[in-house]
Length: 271
Image (cartoon, rainbow, N blue to C red):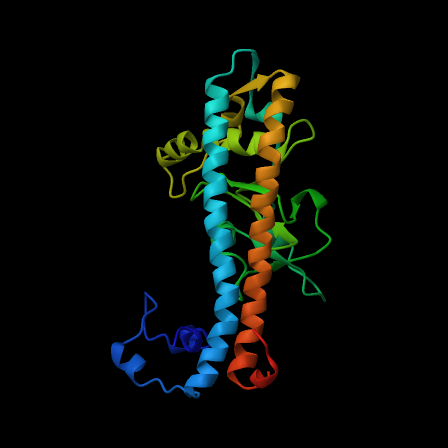
């Protein structure tokens, strides 16, 4: 039933006005073509293997993320030899463009990443922009994104090449490893959220100057290298799992209709 319902585009059945919704009666009236129980079991066995791997990767990443966060906080809380710096000094925070000014012409273009896409991924409603925009506002898998206006949040991008919209920073550094500037930015995120919430505007935000006032502790090179040997492999595995899940989701979504409509001969599939 779960996989059958995944096939349905519920947006086409929307009966709401201000809020998308369905009547219970509409759901009751939906007709589904039900296969034999043997075919159902085969389809579920194939697709559930993919879903279980996705779930396993998500569980692993939840643990990895928590370990990295705890390790980082424990490390900086116990630093003895360090220099004081700030976020602006350890990384480059590149703001995106107002992509409505860069609509594609005679091409599909790149998906435009706004806060919605940061949190929910690319969809059919995602806007597009030219592909020949400034390379500094093109994002790729593994890039750190920080939304500094509206809903302040952070993520590590995992949905392929795209164009970065305004109000989101792409965070990079030539001096420090990714985990270092990611977790230092995350360390100040709650403070940034409070600052944005206090703005007397319709959309709370922080100013770039807040990055200058956000303290960072720079350890000795020896200490940084020591911590890097622990943190970098974990972050690499975290990103690897995110990318694998995207591939698995695409595989599942491609197989789903083919399995349901009989395009794939289940008698020739071995599990």
